[in-house]
Amino acid sequence: MYFKPLAIGALATLALSGMGSMASANTRIIVNCFWPPQHFVCQEVLPGWLEEVERVTDGRVKGNIPPKSVAPPPEQLASVEKGIVDAAVQFNGLIGNRVNGALTGMQPFSGSMDGKAMTQAAWETREKFYPDEFDTVELLSQWVITPGQLFSNTDTPIVTVDDFKSRKMWALPGPLANMAKDIGAAVVATPAVKSNEVIANGVVDSHLGLGGDAIQSFQVIPYTKSLTKFSTGVYTSTFSFVINKDKWAEISPEDQEAIRAISQEKVGMVATELWDTVSADVYSRFGELGIATVEADPALEATLIEAAKPITAAWAAKAKEAGIDGEAALAYYRQRVQELSK
Image (cartoon, rainbow, N blue to C red; front, side):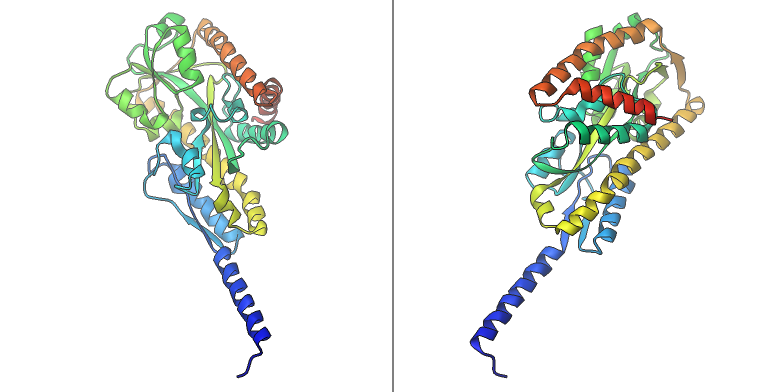
């Protein structure tokens, strides 16, 4: 068959164009999970999101999760920025040198026992006060989990300020570790995934910052003897789910919009609801687990609140330097948490 040169050129252009469309139409996302492989984030939350992504993009975007984390917890954001993985969840407490607004929900005595309410409040606060804070990656979702608690690993519970001061305590890095040190406790601070090494080996006699799900996931229940209950949750943790900008650019605008539309509901809300469910189940079994619950002396709670004030003030000052009205954002977040909580 005879083709004119112009026709051949046009066909070649169309063919190349079609090849480019085919190449860009199928994107595979590698999603890292830093929790233990059996954790529900690795088993349910992220796989569920990938299933939804594949569904809403009609199979044009798919993904997989490596069998074990390819980077330590503090390096999740960096691993996405560098393209080591395409997407990951970052505990915001470990990137306080990079973000400020994302730490709003982590200010002490700001949360409730309703994870979905806190997550909704956090997302609304982000949109209102710092929507573009994550500028090196694409932010897909954020969530807040139910408060970390104060536990004793000995038969003597922690009730008073003196009890607290006498302890060598594992604490989550950041505000909790700083508060505990300020009050007078000896503190060992590590990421939550490393808490078992410290607690199980008897390095400490108490721990501050793990919730019901975490004491189960990180297998510290056998070493936990009592929980100290406060009238308000001392501290909550927030997480951000991000994707590499170059990988995101491979996805068509239509598919990007579809993915954005399902991400907060299928990652943030699903994750926090699972945290609530697992934690509530663990707390309901304290009797059979041999873990007592005691009420904190009001003076201990008041002391913790005072210890938290300079931490929150320092955060607000740093947020202001970054162009964020931290005080207004925190007030708005706390108000929305109260309004939304059950």
